[in-house]
Every structure is written in C-alpha cells, then in structure tokens.
Length: 280
Image (cartoon, helix red, strand yellow):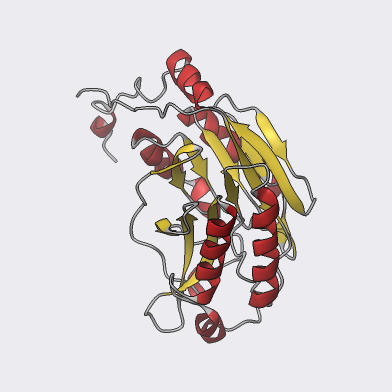
C-alpha cells in the first residue's frame, strides 16, 4: 500500500505557554486564575495550554451526581469566559472542562481549542478513562467515542489527547499520520510509585516515535505530580516545570519536525501492509 503523505505547516517558530497550577475545588476561583494566566501568557506566547481538571479539583468524596450538577456545556459560563479572555488578549487557548453528557450522573472529560478570535475551533472527549491503579474514572465519567481531527493553530497542526491517553501509542500514532505536528495533552497525572518516571518516559516516547512536539501541561498538588513538560521531536525536554505553579514557555519550531521526520522517517517506514498478517 502507498505510504501516507504527511504535510508540514510552514510557519515561523512560535512560543507556547504552559500553565501548571493547583486547582481549587471552587470553579469560580479557578476561572479567575485561568483568566489571569491567559492575560500574562499573551505577552509572550501565541498559544496557552492548561492542564486537565482545570475547572475544579474533584476528590473521591464528591459524588457522581454532584459532579454532574457542576458540569457545563461548551456554551456555558466557564468556557465562554475563557473564550472571551482569549479574544481580548489575542491568544489561542487549549483547556479542559467537565462537560454535561446527557447520561445520568456522568460527565465527559473534554478538552477544547479556542482561537484568538474567541471561537471554539475544536473539542475532544477523553476516550481512555483512567480505570487503573486503584482509580475508576468510569464511576463518574462517560468515555468519548472518537478522536478529534488535528486542527491548525499558530503552533502548527495540533492533535488533542488527555492524560491517560498518553499510555496508548495507537492514539498518538493515528494523530501523527493524520498530520499532527504537535500533540497537546492536558493532564492530571496522579502521584504514585514510579509515576513521575512513567510520565517523563511516555511523553518523550510519544515525541520520538512520531517525530513531533509533545506539550503536556499537568496539575500540581492535591493528588497530582506536576512536572508539566514540552518535548521536541527528537526527545529533548525543552521545559520541565517540576513542582512550580505558574507559566512556563517553550519554542515550537516546525522545521525541527520536518528535519526529524526526514532523518528518522518512522511514519513513512511503517509496514502497514504486513502488520495485519499477525493473527491473534
């Protein structure tokens, strides 16, 4: 079968702002912090990326019904306020929120991309729920049913993932062969044995195997480990925020994607004609 043609955007190097913070259980408090971060990030970056569960921190005591009651639609006040801040500051924003699902006592874990004109240009509902290592997100959430197509931004074409999705290489590969030059993965990576090592290794691996940038904003504090990072297409960590709350910056240069994919053509060297011959 013919190898895929994977176009690369031809834009100048652009800065991404990565926000790492400890979310409050109060939606209003977090929203004000988010709007402030957007205003600050706009002075230095073209796109600002936030972590998973930025809307509010939900602990194990919060019931599925209460979470569902606090959730909103994409047109609700939470996302609309962020969209207005993006427009006022002329910056693109990637974030997440608890989205009403229409299913009793269940919400979607949804990420969104907002253009610098304040319009929502893409949404993605997390398909891999974190039912592992003693956690069961499916007790409160409903899984999404599709991967969002890569969307054009100032950074290049970005593919959206959320946290636990990073552990499934099929998803990042699907996004890469569909044209993604940058993978953005809002996350709330839970603390635990070897978890930070897993986090760093997985993000570097997703970048290396797909010849792309990985931007992974993470929650810090509460149950989460922090370490928000940006990785370049050859696996170099450009930003590691450790345990610091605030904004970190990294430069995204699509020439690095082009050069890496030319020197290490993993996407075009795949043998998709042979893989199906393995009988399971």
